[in-house]
Image (cartoon, rainbow, N blue to C red; front, side):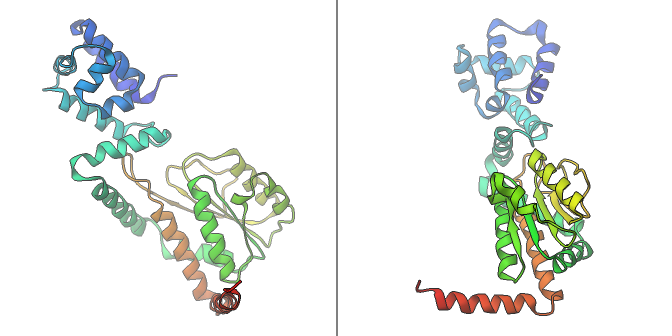
Length: 289
């Protein structure tokens, strides 16, 4: 299968094949094998890897219709940022972000991405959707959380906050192969809250199927680009964590979960506040130990 990031290089080679020299072919060969690295290197570096004269990359760029190698590299970087494979390949994601940062500075680039993603969240998620999640949690006998990779970290935080707020929350993300024992007693009075980014792991699909069979209410917080869930959840909030080449924000899904927990505190008739006060007193009492 062709590397999606190399397709545009193949097209350039085809269109200018009658003009290319042996040195050009050697440079393009190393670029096609690793287009992500090629988009980050300067002309001397890519020429060195190809074993040709340092100026060969500049001559190649001009034969391909660019003013010089910097313009050619900018083209490669832009295609990387826009590439279809960017969200699936972690190396490409990092490279695309570095390419997009350019001379403006990495911190500024990340901050701009986060701000843009959070502003998008304001326009895409409603208070009614947040209330739908909090009402489901309010009536739950038990709340099961599950996510993998970065989502697992968020699940751990949410489960911790829910337990401190007086709710029986179980983080299945920490249980690896023991999750089946935990969901064996799942009933229609329980909630299964899934947090998932991008691809849908097989374990996630199986857990959602168990929840559906048991009649549990299912909640899902996912990327807009994430895989379709089957069976579909009862309530679903899909958010954009950033476009291609931008920082894939964890602040966006964390903002959603924090808002759900805060909204839950406004409708549970003091349950959260009492539980937090009890936890504070217990922590102060047991702190020396």
